[in-house]
Length: 340
Image (cartoon, rainbow, N blue to C red):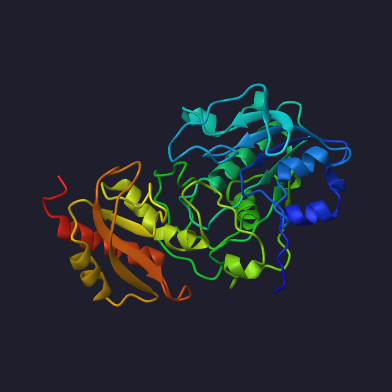
């Protein structure tokens, strides 16, 4: 297997020469690691001639400890990095909408902002929104940005789902992209340069080496590190573009279980009947297994839920959006008045 090299791997192989003599801000989370599982903050913090001055954490915090929708407190002083005392840590997911964007004061004194975030290929997943907001904030003050690319873990051949309707932009959809967009973070940065009218001279991108669009993450030879608390495996990422739709309902999307987004259901649903109805549709690449589960937190915490687990049997033919739309329609029909 030929190992894919991420932007961080390439930067490290260059011995961080392009950052020497600079004060660096880093936007990162737990999955910001190289092929040997060394974290970007530790690599930058020990690189000769590089001053790691600030670390910015996206949703869930830069250490990945916060759960869905949980604000991460601002830290004005030094915080502990993964292996040693380090720079000041700044939250980009606080209690207000304004906290989602770095301010000019937070970026002051930096020579370059390095963005190294593992995305999962879905418009809802907020790390690409954080990248966009950082690009725009840096551009406003003339700060250079370096984006370190990473593979799209669910490949780049399949694009699925509707575009974003005008007037509905938000943190879970900051720009008009397909739900499953098929792009890497570096490709998204290039797209935003054009689509948002950003000055290309201020944004550098180190693209992945060896990645091609037909690859799923396991084929890259890279270690998987969960980028957020409810994204434990690549299997989770595969179903997420459709299953995230359940977040807007009173159905459990499996948060509070060991298989979030693969499990779904509610206390009033008949698991066997639900699975039977879904399997009768013969959707490509997936089998629905009836199951019972009890979430430990979030919706229906502590209650037994009837539902299904999505078992993807063939990723190339599996259509997450189509699958979850059918699932929602059948769940609604079977719920009737029981969900009130």
